[in-house]
Length: 192
Image (tube, rainbow, N blue to C red; front, side, top):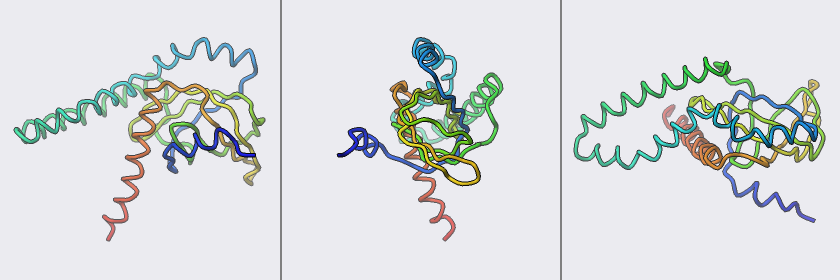
C-alpha cells in the first residue's frame, strides 16, 4: 500500500542545504496552543520573508528598467543589496538568530529531513523554526513526523511533513531551493 503523502512530497523540489533549525516536539495541548498562535508568530518572524517575496515580485520591473536605463538598474541593484544586508542584520539581532547554519538538511516546500539528538515519535506533532541562508528568512511551520531512525553517534534521522506553513513561506522555500540548486550547478562550472 502506498503512502498518500508520498506523491505530494515528491512533487516538491528538494535540495540538500545548510540551515539553522529549532525543533520542538509538541503534546496535544502544545499543538493546540501553537495552532492558535500560528499566524501571530509567523508575522513576528517574517519581516525578511515578506520583503524577499516583494523583491521577487518586482524583478520584472527591474528587468524593464535594465533594458532602458542600465545605470539606474545597476544602482537599484546596489541599493537592494544594501537593504538585504540591513534587513538580515536587523532580523538576526531582533530575533537572536544564529549567524551560521547549524544543520545539514534535505529541504522542500512541503517537508524537511534532518538529524536530531532525540528520537521523535512517528506521527508526532512538531514545531519548526528554520532559518535559510543567505537570505536569513525564518520559516515557521508545524509538522508531523513521517519517520525516525537511528543515524549513528546517538543522532536520529527524522523526516517531517509540514502540516501548517504559510503559503508565502512555502513559495519562498521553493524559490530558495531553486536558487540553491542553481548555485550548486554554477559552482562546478566556475571551477572549470
